[in-house]
Amino acid sequence: MRYVPALAAICACVLSAQAPPSDIEQRIQRIQRGILTQPVITKGDTPATTSLADRMTAMRVPGVSIAVIHEGKIEWARGFGVASLGGAAVTPDTLFQAASISKPVTAMAALHLVQSGKIELDTDVNQYLKTWKVPANIFTVKQRVTLRELLTHTAGMTVHGFPGYAAGETLPTLVQVLSGEKPANTTAIVVDTTPGTEWRYSGGGFVVAQLLLQDVTGQRFPALMHDLVLGPIGMTRSTYEQPLPKDRMAEAAMPYRPGGQPVPGGPHTYPEMAPAGLWTTPSDLARFAMEIQKELAGKPGVLSTAMAREMVKPGMNNWGLGIETGGSPAHPYFTHSGANEGFQCDLVAYDNGDGAVIMTNSDTGGQLAGEILRTIAYEYKWPDFVPREVSENKDLTISRDVLSRYAGVYAMPPGVNMLITVENGQLISQMTGQQKVPLFAKSETTFFPKVVDAEIEFPKDTNGPANQLILHQNGRDMTAKRLDDAEAKKVLDEAAAFEKRFKDQAPAPGSEATVRRLITEVQAGKPDYDRMSPALANATRQQLPQIQSMIAGLGALQAVTFKGVGPGGADIYQVKFEKGSLDYRVWLTAEGKLDRANVRPSE
Image 1 (cartoon, rainbow, N blue to C red):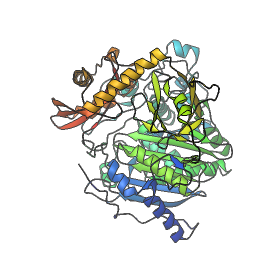
Image 2: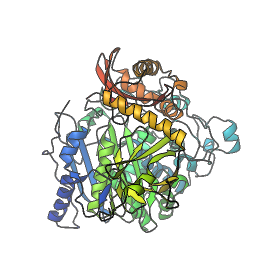
Image 3: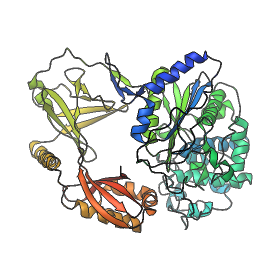
Image 4: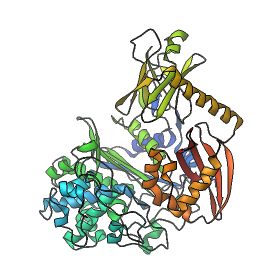
């Protein structure tokens, strides 16, 4: 399916009085015309950009809605594209599912009850829970679960996220979700590590918080969220009602798959309202962010200034209470992203009054939202999220002898290698299972790619072959040791075999059988994890309900057709079902195990 989003159908812009409308409109036009698709800008070069319309078309995102906060006010809000293919244009009032951005809004309600003295952050939550209790086990004997731990993802709770329920599916009660009882489509939410000892993202923990808030207030969750947060802040378009009431469906964007196909039956329903159930707009989420900014500035609202500061205080893994934190001491920010079936979104706000909210109605919208955020940050000169500007030393001449000392195979945990080669006088890097990436010289020992925000440094400690490299990325340094000749030969032989397979476009032995077996096992809900790499097995366990949901409505398997070998090493198969088709990309280990796999709708 191909389509062009109806960008001509754009709503009126919501403007503040901070600057003349013409100045704001120019900013909007610069952002709309100049989406920054790459995270690195070479100093002196013109940044690679594309228009928002072209990017939406290429990524098959039907609709986007944006609100930008500047100096503590909504400077502008605008919709782009359509709420549904062939339907109405997106406006600032179009509703989207906020997905996991539901969590910080829930956290604000919980913290309001804390400051009101109705609950405590550091008390055993079972003292407040009435209709269900956190099951006792060897982990809870050591440390009871507290509300603080639920909100900071440190309670040791299971279940990362929720796939929701398609139209017509029977909905479970909240206790059934917590207990993992049918018709719940996720496993029981339990404690499987000692609370307070490690950070692990858990939507399950927020389901516990949802029940706690209901039990303490005696209200339905949508009603208590309206009374405690949405109403007082002025989030008039927002609701936690699941499903969205029928008389409001005309206001909502419809969700879409990566290939442009609509999610069958429309939006999924999320009885897990606290972690995933908010219907809202970017402008309303901007009001939520501005409420925190106002409170941090010493103007109490839903929360006191002290409680707002507690909410955004960085804890384990830089998480506050329900929200992630980042930035520098001079420019701290809070942020959260969200991904429901067919919806992806981002919220970022600086403590001092700037920020943005971007919402989309596509499974590919997360990447686009990141690019839009990067462009907004660049336009408004934020200290974070902007493309990193790197100075390429074009006057530097590095001899082939020096470059050849860097060539080799470097081991990067876990089980990933980086191959460094010299081609036509230029260093080339290639991670296991990824494409070749040219490297550009910053100095004689430091190089950078233009497609990833990273640097590779070869410590200058020998005249012979480099014995290690250091990858600088995301504020972290990872040292990779050079493999010895025998180990490197094995990796190089495998790389050569792949190059031949890619040239011949020949599938790896057994890959078709692996795809067929994987589909059968996933449909039955019983994948053979022993045939997978540990990382893939772990990811499949967490995402099995979502994967099953994606293929459930496609009917019986009809055909598996090899399409080719991708440049990253994947064997690509088109899998046809009764009611649609999917593309499977699979990577096999030398021993024939399934190392990695991903699935997307066929183009």
